Length: 147
Image (cartoon, rainbow, N blue to C red; front, side):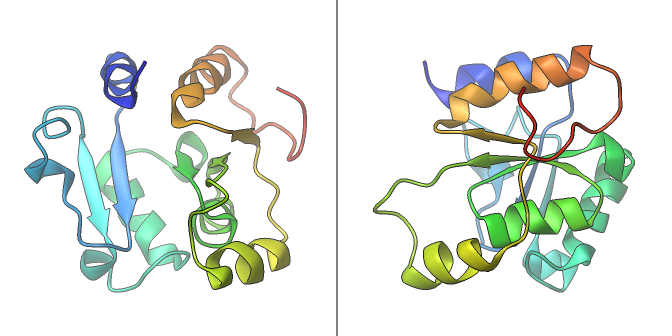
């Protein structure tokens, strides 16, 4: 099953937003424009990930506090560390072996002290984790702990 059906199911339970260093705008993408609730770009925030301004702008646009937000990303250095430094939970989607540059995959990832609260191989696996977290106590799970 694809990511779009998963996002539609999640949309019934949570707000969905995007946070990007790139120039993609989900509101101009037919498959996403009626699913995404808010979007933050590095241009709008005035800085790229992992700068806290990007995460703070997401908090403002979503109306949620940091401890209520979850980042799903494929970069330990930018996505996961940035989110955790901002007080968010984080789910690391393992990038394919062929993806990313040497800098992205070796330099940042190996030097990053961040341990995601959860890890998945495919984005479609995120739904199960989010539903489990939603049924648990509102406390953050221990980093590196089993889910």
